[in-house]
Image (cartoon, rainbow, N blue to C red; front, side, top):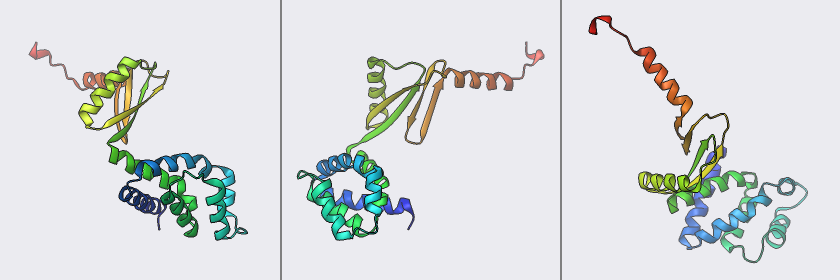
Length: 186
C-alpha cells in the first residue's frame, strides 16, 4: 500500500470516528499535543525496537506517553497503529488529518511572501478579501523575502499568485517585445 494511501486511510478513519463521537476538537488537540513526541528520535527508536513486544509498547504508550486527558479514541487509535505496524506513518497521518479538520472547519492556510513584513492593517485587509473570495477562514503566514523588490507572492495551497514587481516588469517586457510597431499606422 502506498505511503500516502496508508496515511489518508487512517486519517479518514480517525476523522470519521472523532466526528461521530463528537470529539473532533479534543482528538485534534490530542494529536497536535502528541506530535512533538511522534517526531522525536526517541519515539522512532521506541516504535521500531524489535526487542519490545507490542503489548509492552502499548502499555508504555498508554501509561507513560499519554496523559489522563487524552481522549480514549485517540489512545485506541495509537494502539491500533502500533498493532498494525503503522507508527512510522504518524506524521503523514497527522498532516492528512489536519487537512481534513481544516476543510471541515472551513480553514485555508495561506502564505504571503513580501520584501517587508505586512502590518496588521494590511494582513486584516488581505484576510477579509480572502474570506470573501474563498468563502473560507484564512490563516496568513507572512514571510519576508528581501530578494523581492516590492509587491508580494500569495500561496494558497498549490495555487501561487505573483504580484511582485519583478513579475510585473517581466510581464510588461514580454508585452513590449511582442508589440510590432507599424510605421504606416502613424
